[in-house]
Every structure is written in structure tokens, then in C-alpha cells.
Image (cartoon, rainbow, N blue to C red; front, side):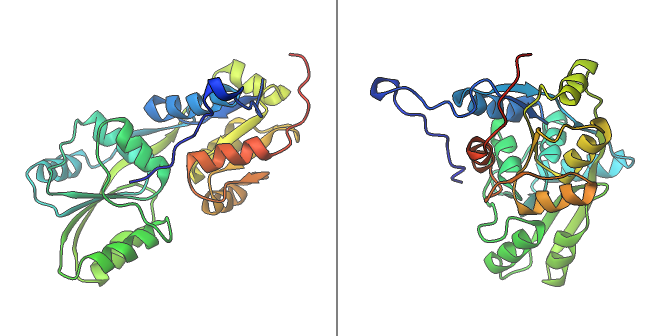
Length: 270
């Protein structure tokens, strides 16, 4: 899969542009994914502030998840599907084994990047519509014969993917892999957001948007809210966020490029 990479000019050919010089940008996920985003932001001069806003809590049906992951390792499935980066955290935490013959389909560049950051491969990311519905449509186009599919999802996810695959004749086992819970930020970060010291907040999912609204009730108008694609922007607005920047594509590169193009207010001295 071609994720798209951030291309930095060769230092010998001139200085690297720093459109985000000195800007503090809140990165709402930690781990390898958050580290990668922080590195890209630093290339443009930004000061990344990694503040995980969501995490996963164990599913309420542990036995079903354990059985599904054991069957996955044993080669029982033709496909494994994931629709969020948080599901990657679950796979990694459980040291899940994905056999070579099991193809992996994920929705979103965020999820694909999270998979590859912890050493899992990705075989399919929807090309046309990077959503659960788009992935179902592409898998149905690829597979003319009935296949066995393991769909790992959050407790709150709508079963769009499962429903469409079953309607197309596939054998789908839909398993709740985790519950999404908010992670309280430190008082310092909450204070920095409230005071306007954080210049931009990256919003990478509807769950992140809900936490931004809940944890930062008084976001200054000067703080840029940037959503990773139109679908996330819609979820963010539904959660009550005023979105300033929407990436044209659902990729980290597109999100950072959009923030870099947006005219951020002149920063006051901290």
C-alpha cells in the first residue's frame, strides 16, 4: 500500500520550509502512530504536543474475543477487517498472530499506518470510498466466491461492513474487540488549550472529537480545529466542534498539509 510520504527537500539544495514554525499542535493519539505524526510536524517547524484523548478498554465478552483471535491464528479466516486504529492497539496488546494466507483489509490511512507501525501488513485499503461501506464494496468486487471474514470492531461501531458482506453471501464473524474510553489529559495541557497556547488540534475520529468537546469546553476561537477528511469533519460537527480545516483526503499527510496552508494567527509570547 502506498501511504504517501512527507518529502523533505535535500538540505544541500536549500533550507526546508517551516510553515508551522513555533506552532504548538495537539496530536490526539500516542504510540508509534503519534510518534510518526509528531516527526512529520517537526519537519515543518511545529512543536507537537502528544496528548492521547482515547484509549481502549477490554471488551465485556473476553471469551468471544479470545476464541476469535485463536481461530485467526489457526488460519480459520480468509480476511481480517479493521475499521479503526484502536483495533490495532488491541491486536498488538494481545500479540495476535495473522497467518500469511489471511488477507488484511483496513479503513483509513490512520489505521493502515498504525498497523504497519507495529509490524502488521495491510493488503487492502479502499481506493474509492475510504469507509466501511467502501471497503465492503471493494471486497465484494474482489471475491466472487463466499469467504470467511473476521470483523473486529468497537462496541459502538455500526455493523455496516458486516451487513453488506453477509448480504453478498460471505461468512462473517463480527466480534467486539474493545470499548472506547476517554483518557483525561493533564492539567497543563488542558490549561494550554484554554489559554490558546495550543495553536491547532488534530481530530482523527469521531471519538476524538467527542473527547475534545468534553475535555476542552472553552477552546479559543483562534485555535485551529483540523479534521482528517470530510467524514471525520461531519462527525466532529455533530459532536459540537467548529471545524476550521478539513483534509481533502483521509491521510495524515493531507491533514498536516492542510494545517500548514491555513493562516494561523500570530502567536503571542508564552
